[in-house]
Length: 169
Ligand code: SF4
Image: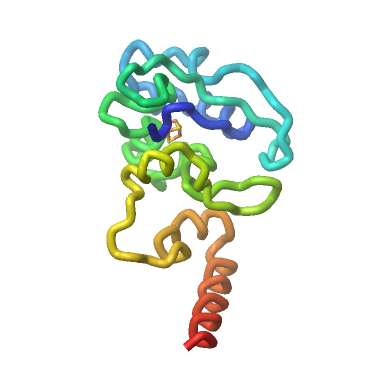
């Protein structure tokens, strides 16, 4: 289900992905290397995106995905080609990955962070996010929250949560 519907990408970031096409193409199947097929071309205004506008990644039919489709960047081995290309280029693994994909399952909506618990992945039992031993969400999702808040604000969040926990004991 993950990546079945693609993702909205900030317009400027989509342009950066196109600029970096030559390092991304080798990590996609040959029939998906045409840059013109990577985005759906429907630019929409959205104040949650730094450019003030977003565009969707293209989706392609996939009868094996419960969504019936998959993001054009999702490879047959179920890895994101943008992340694979970032790693292969010896950059941070999220360098070319869209912000909302890095943030998931946290999502940014109306300038606030939320857990995307209405996502169909949860309706189907959580898939790879099915919990093992209980871990507080702010710890489990540390990398995602540091991306959203910055290290300093994340550290403040931890301090507040830990102070609250101590107050309850
Ligand atoms: S860009 Fe990558 S992580 Fe995001 S939906 Fe597409 S395949 Fe998935």
